[in-house]
Every structure is written in structure tokens, then in C-alpha cells.
Length: 133
Image 1 (cartoon, rainbow, N blue to C red):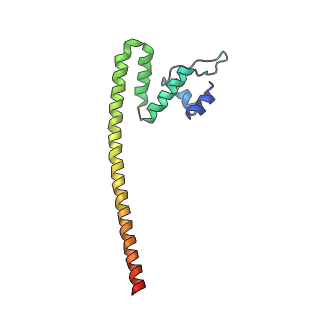
Image 2 (cartoon, rainbow, N blue to C red):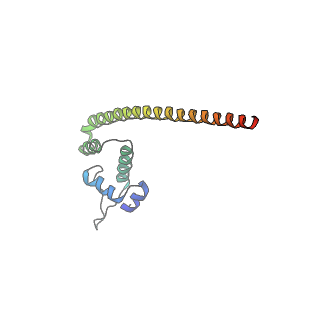
Image 3 (cartoon, one colour):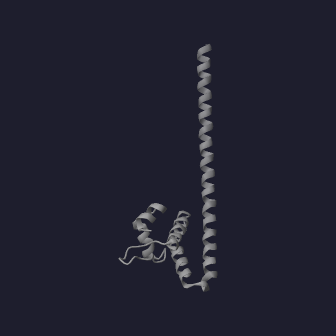
């Protein structure tokens, strides 16, 4: 696949794809004889993984380290697993913080809704009194 096709498929700009490759976030992409990037299934798998991990907030440095370890071979399996576990723990902590923030926002919205209901009830009473009075 060309860089334009991969860009469309994963909704990542071509500049971002080049950047990811340049900094080692994805392994070097195979090239055609004329030097153009030719993303194969493995390359696309890396793009998909990195998009997912970045969307989850995993830091670029951790992902670069993961790719470097992967390229060193099976001797790094334990180190890769440990890195992923650490990132999972960080993600869970962020999710917990986000849940707390969401709960607080929901509480504040509920207070506004209750306040609006109170105002609407007061207006109805005022209107009813005005009609009967």
C-alpha cells in the first residue's frame, strides 16, 4: 500500500506516518525499487498498533522502546511484557482519574438540571397564580 492509502485507511496524515517511522515508532517500511514506501501487512499492523496505543495515551518514548526491544528478538520478550504491564497500569490510573472527573461533571450537570427544574416549577406556579388570581 502507498503512504496515501495507509493514511486514508488509518486516518493518520502522511507526515505523521513518516514521523513515526523516522523516530522508530514503527519499524522501517519496505520500499519499492524507486524508493517509495510500500506498506505491507506487517507495517500496517504496526501503524494500527501505534494508533491504538497513542489514542490510549501511551507515551511515545515507551512505544519507541517497545519497538526497539521487539527488533532485538525473543530475548526481550520479558522486557516487552513488563513494559506493556507498566503502560497498562498507567492507563488504568488515568482511566480512574478520568472516571472521577466524569463523575464530578455529571454531578454538576445534575445540580444544574435540578436548579432548572426548580426554576421551571417556580415559573409554573407564578403563571398558575397569575391565571387564578
